[in-house]
Image 1 (spheres, rainbow, N blue to C red):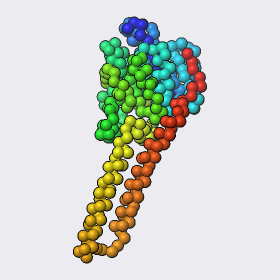
Image 2: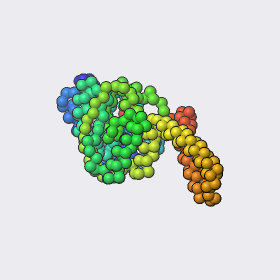
Image 3: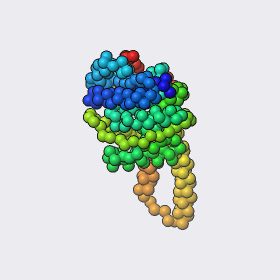
Image 4: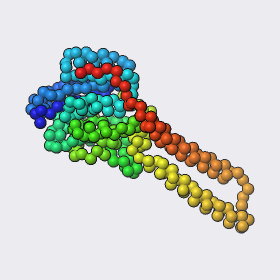
Length: 315
């Protein structure tokens, strides 16, 4: 273990207000691990600038100039949080034996990285950081998050509840993960599919020190939908079941109409007809939308466009 190297990958988008203090905290955590003689001095930090529009990259350059343990990777534009994580892991795995991913705001407890390294030393290839409470979340966010986990479970998706992207992965686990080439990717749902030995470290999430969340409601909903469509085709199967039930209902309505006609109990009117048309039309539009979403993602996959474009690397 004395020769193992740790790299902490930090995706950053417009994080100029917190980045310097966050990096100092992470360096202190790495020094604490080094002092325990688990890793020696072989530890560094790789910050991935996801096309920030503020002074994030200038701060990374200054940090790199002051400390060679701090490295930087800059995208040519904003490609998204998941792409930043993949880029960071792809670069870090070239030299690291274990890789920790953590967001730049350090709402996830960086002190738990010490426990993650201990779990790695005990043989775990993947160590999940799992929140033991959601006290810092609003009622809406807490309720929707719990509901989302339940929906994914019903759809057959294997997911670690209350785990985001704070985790440690061994070199072989990262190399295996990077063999998955899809562009429409939901990392936290894909990691459990790797099959390596796992462990969990529990922590309490803290409020942001400064700045604003980079995941407003609109992005959260898009991210949640990406998670469903990238991991399961259950929505399409649901459409098939709904269509089958609609056909059975239509057959029943035909029988009902014939019986009512024979009994002379038919009522002339258009209300029921219009309601039925709107209902069926709505189902059709929703069905086409869901199928179109899958076709659109399939189109993106077959084009094999790069996930991201790296503009600058500071080694």
